[in-house]
Length: 136
Ligand code: HEC
Image (tube, rainbow, N blue to C red; front, side):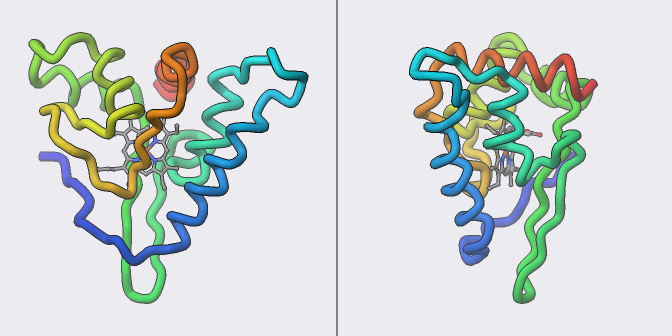
């Protein structure tokens, strides 16, 4: 049984991190207007602050509030996102976790997981591929 994070809206530091990384995304690439950031660059900019550089997950505590950010291991994700096969491939569902904040049942993830709706499909695909090939 996987544990979902309870609703914690008051950890402003995490929200600050999220908006920082969101701002960082627009300057990702740095090599001119057409340079597309790689999955690794996107991950390091936008995800590592919460999920960890090696996808190990994190626990943040501030003023008596605790929030757990899950580890991102592809074997765990594959298991979790295989529970409702009609929702499509694991890759597709993890894409929807990233872009729409949907869990393996199609229900909303905790709002501490940002909805990355502004990323293009190619960017989300490259993130999924990075997680899949790096965090086995
Ligand atoms: C502000 C912190 C934060 C940032 C930044 C963040 N996440 Fe998350 N993420 C979370 C939290 C918290 C959860 C757990 C939500 C839940 O359990 O309902 C989560 C859940 C997930 C899940 C679902 C995991 C599962 O076991 O179902 C995936 C996939 C994911 N994040 C990928 C990413 C990717 C890729 C990025 C970067 C584009 C990212 N996250 C950025 C906090 C964050």
